[in-house]
Structures are given as structure tokens and as C-alpha cells.
Length: 448
Image (cartoon, rainbow, N blue to C red; front, side, top):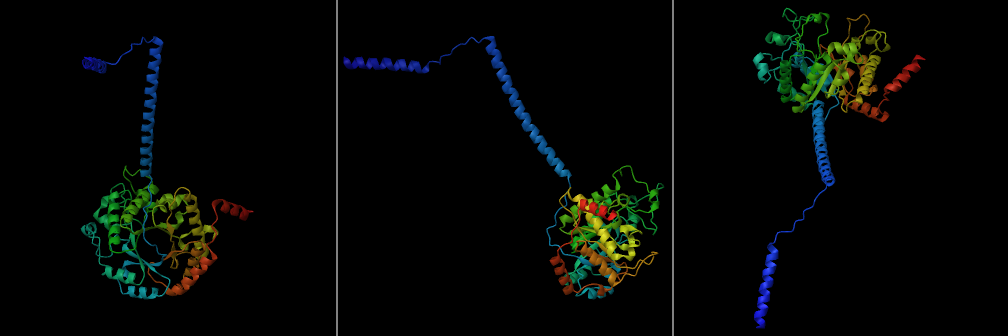
């Protein structure tokens, strides 16, 4: 009986527990006052508002980051060329000389001297390519000639002798392309082509189809083994009759901006080929707003775009009184030093706005300017005076220009002498370059 009683008690307890487990939870109904309801509503609105502020902050930050990226994309930077540089000491050679027996004489004269570079005409003043270039655009236009009969052999010979070879490309003076693409040229109101005083046609720098043509030639030069591409006539023609030229409506960018845009375009293309890139510029544009605007060359800005800036600072090109010199051609050392001081000042003033500047490698005068009223004969002493002015100005590279390629090789040091001289310069240390403030103070002291 007791056992049965216990069983019944257990069964009853089990049923009670089961019933409790399935019962729904208790709910309490709260009668909220209007004030409590308003308070809860305000809390919900405040939480929603703070959440929206946080979301807006995130979106604003994302927009700012995108805008910064867009701005950075608009700021052009010179692509780096990761190749070893050479301190160039060179001379200019025409395509005719390069393709003749005279080239042997040139190379023999250079042998054993400090000279280690040649600048060779590849796209000449007539717009012709001086060798049979494997370039579809050049072949289509028939622009190439066989002036240099065996360019690969010439390049190999130069490189075997440790000579750095630079391809000179004349840019916006191109009479040959005018016969093929007159629509690319500077034109007068009647549609005829403008001719300079030498009867040569100039390309309209705003014609970007021509940019592609030039870039393809430069790329072919890189493919064929040149160490550097150098652009000449990277400018507008400056003759008085240029007033007759009519530019299209779309040519609203000013001269310096379009030339800078062109140089940047070429720099990007040359960087893809991993070849050094340089430009020749008028020496007179340095520190002269009028000359700079006339030719379209901004010295400091262009120095941000290339590996080497090659200002043509021939003493004969400066007018009487420049740099305080009565007749600059008669004072080669002082004139070069004055021009390079101006270069330093122009680049120093721009240095705070950017982190990169090209190496300055000036063109020096290797000819006698007998057409001037006041001139001197340029021989060994005058060439050495200019070179010394380069060194004394804190620069280390130079090029000598003689259009006829008549060089007195005795004007150049032997390799051994050049090494001793360079060592001596390093021991003495670089010359002190004055800052703008110091220059102003010096000018005041001189004035007093």
C-alpha cells in the first residue's frame, strides 16, 4: 500500500511540473503616463539622430579621401628612371658627320680625353630621320633617310669605347611633316603655311597628333639603343611674323602651359622605355618673364619634368650689358657664371614647391660668333674658361656646340687629368650658393 501511495505521489508531482514547463511567461501590463511615453520617444529620436550623424561622418570621410585621391591624380610627378647616371662631358655631332668618314676622326680625337658623350642629330632641322628607323609612322610618311648607313654599328662602337650616346630630336620646327600634314602646321589666316626667315615651317604645338608622332620616334631611338633622348626646339617660333599665325579656337591654353604639358607627355612615354630624357632651352628665358612667355618655356617648371635641363647659355647669345658685362661674348667665364647663377636662383625659388628638379647640364659655346660687332675668337682658352665657370658654379656636366663639328681636342683634359681635377674639386668642396635673402643683402652691400 505504501509503495502504491508513493507512486501516486510521484505521478502527481510529474504532472504538476510538466504543466509548469509549458505555461507561457507572465506578462505585466504597465500603464505608461503621457510624460513617460514622450520621454521614450525623445530617447529613440536622439539615438536615431546620433546614428545618422555617425553615418554622415563616415560618408564625409570617404568623400574626402576620394577627393584627395582625385587631387593627387591631377598632380603630375616625374617618373623615376632607375638607371645609373653618367656625368656627361660631350660634343654635338650632325647626322652628316655621323654618317661620314669624319666620324672616325671624331672618335679618334675623343679617345683618351675627358669627353665621354656624343649628341647626334637623329631628327634633324628639316624633319628627316637620319637612319632607316623601324617605325611604321616614319615609314608611312617616308621621313627616314640613310644618312647614317649603319646606326647599330655606330652605337656599338661608341658603347664599346664607353661613350654615352644622346639622340637629338628637333621638335616643332619640321618642314618635312608640313608637306605631309599641313593641318598640323602653323597657318596664316588664308590657310597658307607660315615660314620663318629661313623658309622653314613650324608645327602648331597644340596639335597633339604630332606629339604621338614625336613620341613614337623617341621610343624607336630608345629601342635602338640610345642612352638618352634630347629634345630641341621645344618651343614656339619667336619671329615677328608669327603675328600672322592664326590658332584654332581650341588653342586656349597659354604657351608655357601647352609646352609643359607636351614635355610631361614625353617624359611619361620615355619613362616607360626606361631611357633618360632631356630638353634644350633658351638660356635667356632664365629670369626673363617676357622671353619665357614668348617661347613657351618655363625654366623652373620644365626642370620638374625631365632628367636633364640643357640651357643654351652661349655667351654670344646674350645682349650687351647682360650680367653687368659690356660685351658678354668677350667674357666667356663671367657670362657662363652669370647665367648659371641665374639658373641656381630660378630653381632655388621653385624648390620649396616640389621635391624633384632635373640635373642642369648646360650647352657651352664652341664656335666664334664673328657676326657680332664685339666678339673674340673661341679656342682652347675660351672653352676651358666656360668649363671652369660650370664647375665654379657648382655644376658638373656640360656639352659643347659647334655646328660644323670642328673641335680642337687639345681643349679637353686627358682622363687622368680630369680625374685629378675632380678629386681636387671634391677636396675643396662645392662653392657656396647664396640664398635669395643673402643675394639681396649682397646686392644692397654692393649698391652701398
